[in-house]
Length: 78
Image (cartoon, rainbow, N blue to C red; front, top):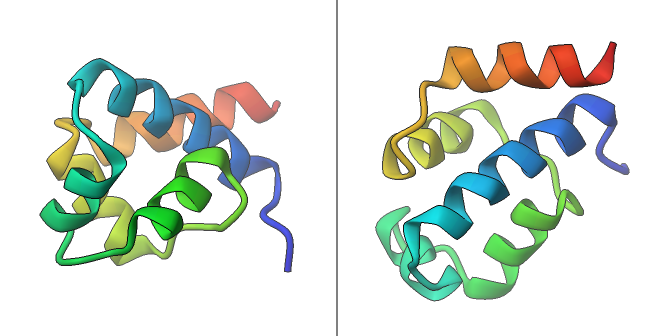
């Protein structure tokens, strides 16, 4: 199943925050419990939808408020 507009909007917001952290995708995967770099890349590009638990963990690592991310993504899809 292809990610929908909301997933793509979330991915764009998360990717922007990731780029500001100046860490590698490999390191981000390690911080999230050992997710392979290739999978992190798919999440950041929006090729793969995040489940809620991973989304919240990713927000914590990237110092994002999950509710603000969802609100911004909703605004971007309207």
